[in-house]
Length: 59
Length: 132
Figure 1 (tube, chains in turn red, cyan):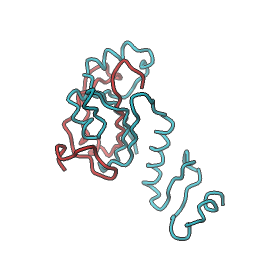
Figure 2 (cartoon, chains in turn purple, yellow):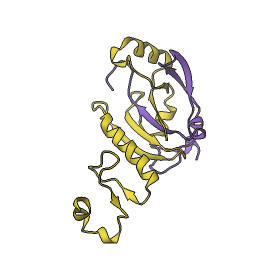
Figure 3 (cartoon, one colour):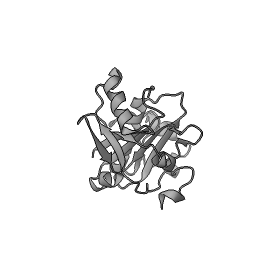
Figure 4 (tube, chains in turn yellow, purple):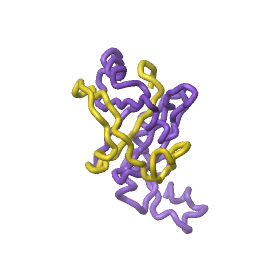
């Protein structure tokens, strides 16, 4: 399923469509990087995505 | 089996850097902080608020096959409980190994009571199964 076809969010049990890797800041390296879901799956890793409204606020 | 936590907001990676380096609460942060300034990924998970351009407090667990197996969304004003997130994650790991078991609400960690093969026999007898 293409990202554009999903309206109102994914449902449980659905396969998450691959999305363009996100740019990241990586505190352990003090450097920028990328997060790719495809790489996570290739490495057989579980992923927890933790969304929040804005930096400089509480979590 | 390992897991990676990635935080996501609609701020840019530059703001993530500035926040992490200035906020003492974040001094020990080990996870990557991802930037979704277009809101594309936030929309995919249904947490993007078109009115504000911000993402709601959504937590999503994706298994190694790429399937979304857990979702929790809190509104702006309610923080999340990390113990509950870890409970859900551990339960999902456990149930991936033990596919005929389910984790009831009081399950916290490996060794706690699960329900095995919940089927017709258990109808009306959940209390006995939980306490037996």
